[in-house]
Image (cartoon, rainbow, N blue to C red; front, side):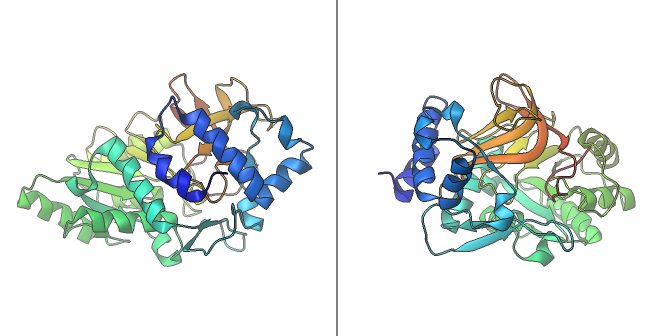
Length: 329
């Protein structure tokens, strides 16, 4: 019988060769200890004993996080992360068993793609997320700010002039640290429209989401506008959501890369159980860091995946909720 501790100890050792074995072990652990996930599969009319490999594992619709406590085993909750949603809407809740592991995972992933957090000044534009107080994105950002060790690392809310002044101060210091500015799309757009600062030496990263603040646009339109106004060569992106523990990153080419313990599969848009070898359709995520909730999530995002496992987000299913961390088409 596997345990949370066993999976936790092995999580960061996963690679392409061991991914399927780990995923299969985690599935058996979760289907036997997560009553919501087990009940979902049973109601589909699937005999759990008939599932023989990773390719046959059913994915839990992401909406279950709105109406149920998606927990594997029972334990004391250390943190509860809530989705942004819209006014009057039900929000998703992700109950976290071990916040230290959750934050360690976020830093491992960042280090994997960008190098050490300590090598950056971490500047964040996350208005509305800060005010909510239960955002996984804010929790991650706060952790990065502290880990960076920079006096300039901070949340800047809507303080655009202070942010620009900070960038100028960092340049005068002439240190070796790089500058990263990470923000929600509507805040970066407002900064670009009102000030159009020269950020040629700054890594600009958008986390998506207009949150009903303004008209939704495609990621390509957003990036082209920000590139022009900020005088940069490319815009980076982060793909994450409340219900996941891991993030994927795009370093300016619109394609997201996942850490070794996260994988994207594509399902048929009309038959959610038809995954197969598809290149475009609904996005399913295997996030093996979701040890204590559910690692097999059916999202409401539409996208494509290539032979290297890199994926693009094209939009959302009709009538799905507007979420804070994704752009719509």
